[in-house]
Length: 456
Ligand code: MLT
Ligand code: ZN
Image (cartoon, rainbow, N blue to C red; front, side, top):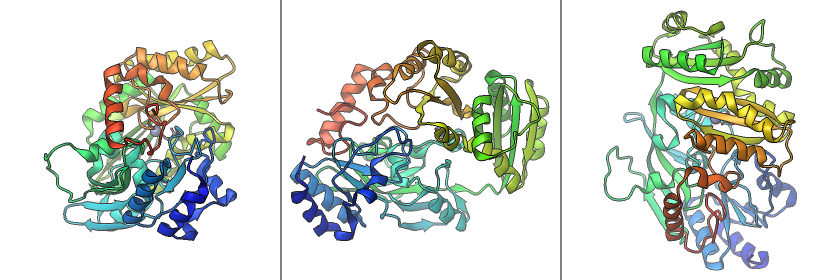
């Protein structure tokens, strides 16, 4: 490790004394991630205000051999944004400028530190919207969301973060600036660095800004919360609505164990007078109210036991709360092991029917809580009641996923949490290519070492 006496004065010379944070109480918020499961320590948090300052910090770190953990809103769930071995934390939150919003073409440039909700507000003010939405919108930053290729609740209609990208500005480990922000819809001029950096989790370069495409506003929204027989019924309903209505924007699933936690921790009354085996939340969005069309499709679907619909904002928010408040309710109950997996749609019901048994077989006292994005095959398997270091249930779940042809990470990334299982779903050739890319772009290994693939 580089002695702080050598590193810190030179950081102060770049960003100013106020933006090199060394006070333990201030650092604490950067040293633990949102889940509280991943913690570390850092000699300092450096907060540059501009792209040249980020470049100068990285150039200095390369010169001194000081490792860096880039961090945005610190809403990651896989331990990839906390310092694990006394790395310097490079906070991008001050890069919070929204610029060049082109209301004609529907494009905008966002600094890495812009929060998702600030971007959404800016887009809405100009008659547009942004394609990605997720519950941590007030804290999650665009740079972190690109670095982790965040997904969220609208992937089935608009794709994840990588699908919104038109260009990127990033700092390589040498301190050189890669700037590709012209916003060209077509650009086949060589390797696509923008897409390479999306999902690279801060291991290949530090993202400072991105050019994003916007989506047309869909002012009319209809939400249906359905109680259904099981996840197979939920998937049949999703398929029927998808085929009938191009306005389907979200299809989210949850189960009684999660609903009970949400109602208890958020103080909500249950949505229906009786309990049911599975719940499906659908949202359609368009220029006109889709409520009647949605109700028509649902009327001919099978497996629906009860339903509630809302088109007005308070009513929609009331129904969404049962799904969106899962993450906080689970964390209020304890520190979960969070697994975030995708299955081929045809195997999703089988996975759901087997996963609780697979967990119980290795740890009978574990409490699984499942929810997720039924429209894209992504289930979040949260496991409560485990010791932080007991990874037997994680192993059982991820092996089940791999055996069914799924992925061990759908949208949260690999971080440090999933690294031991990467080999289950990425071949030796895949991992060799990933290592080659890492050592080409970060030969001295200073960028988020030990994340995604082992360092060294
Ligand atoms: C969600 O879908 O709410 C997020 O992925 C967060 C989580 O998995 O807890
Ligand atoms: Zn999710």
